[in-house]
Amino acid sequence: MPLVWLMLTCSCAMVGTPSIAWREDDIVGREFDIADERSAESYTFSPDGLVLATLGEVGGAVADPIRYWKIINGRLVIAEDREGKQEVRRLTLIERRASEVVVRTKWGRRLIFRIRTFGEPTHMPESSPGQSSGRSS
Image (cartoon, one colour):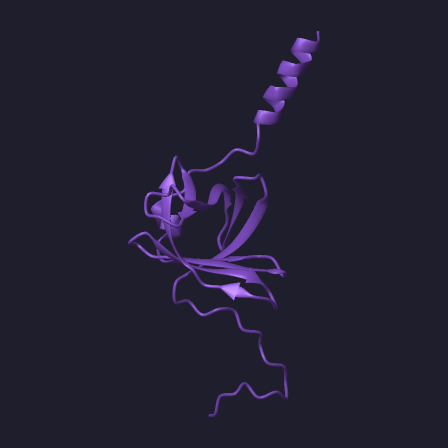
């Protein structure tokens, strides 16, 4: 009986959230910005495999390294080398939404990234009545 329990426990633990394979058009020309108030983590993906990253903490130190991206076995790999061997991030796509993606890291952490096409303006809060928008007529 203990062997059966062990087999059932292990097989249930391996059944996780189903994943979706990444496609190039999910990535190329897009900016991903983490939906987390404490972290500064964003990625801008170019068609030639480069990714410009911003990594750090809001209100703290931030670094802007240039990395490489590649889709390996349906997962998005961000690495220090073109081959993806010096992996920095591996993201499994869990859900695609209109303006965001839900991913799982290789450590099992669930993250949400807001996405936009490179060059689209970021959302700016509307000015309230009586405030100047900074534009002259």
